[in-house]
Every structure is written in C-alpha cells, then in structure tokens.
Length: 160
Image 1 (cartoon, rainbow, N blue to C red):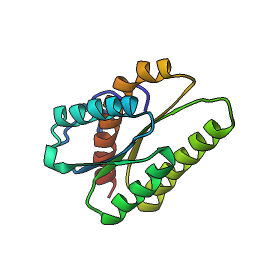
Image 2 (cartoon, rainbow, N blue to C red; image 1 turned 180 degrees about the horizontal axis):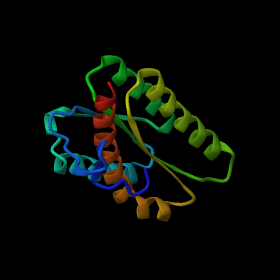
Image 3 (tube, helix red, strand yellow; image 1 turned 90 degrees about the vertical axis):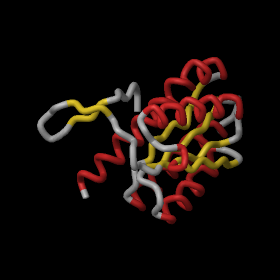
Image 4 (spheres, rainbow, N blue to C red; image 1 turned 90 degrees about the horizontal axis):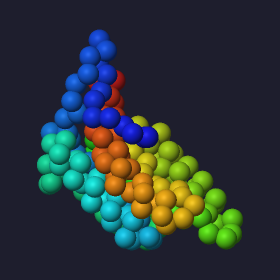
C-alpha cells in the first residue's frame, strides 16, 4: 500500500483517475491509540470524499483494538453491502512479545477475511516502533488506504 497513487492501469496501460462514485466502502477503526487512529480515519474519509465516495456510502465503525478488526471486517463482508473495506489501527512496539503477536495476528486476520470473502481490504494497521513513527505515517497511510480501496474495488469489478 506504500504510496498508492491516484491512478489505475487499464488493460491498454492507460492511466485513469480513481473514481469512487457509486462505491460503498466499510471502515473498521481500532480505538487503541485513539489519537493516531482518529487521524488515520480523518484523512481516509477525506480522501474517499475527494475520490467521489458519497458520505452515505461510507460505513465507519470502531472496535476496541487491532485484534478485533478482523471480526468486524468479517461481519461487514457477510452483509455483502460494501465494494471494499478498510482496516485502520496502530500497534506500537512495547517491551514484550505482545507487539509481534498483535501485529501478526491482526494482519493475518485481515488477509483471511479478504480471501474468504473475495473482497478487497486496504490494510492500514500501522505497526511502528514508537509514537513518533505513527504520527509521521498517519495522514499518508489514511489517504493511501482510501485510494487502495477504490482502486481494488474497481479491479475486482473488472475481474468479475
């Protein structure tokens, strides 16, 4: 998802601007490290609006932490109302092995939901060494997640 740009390649290699009109996007945001995940969400939603996704077509919910994101994504995918989903969270390394567990399991859960349901999920669960790294990435990764979700929703539509 690094630096996803605002274009997608079509079959002929031409670039076309991403268009979120008529797309329905679900967002699951972890509340742990709330200030950072709120920034991710703010920039993600602003970018979705800039891409043309209507506010009423964005379903945004929160969960306690990163490990709960996959379950909520799964519930949204079960509803079959969204064209793409977005996972927002922030895991900051601490002094124990817990960081690795949460980072690995939350990432695996997001991937499993995507593959099990055949729905694109932009994973913007930050895994960082410290809070400064999280703040340095929050705005960019929130916007990237929105662009990835829109691009992948169109790709999946093209492939179906």
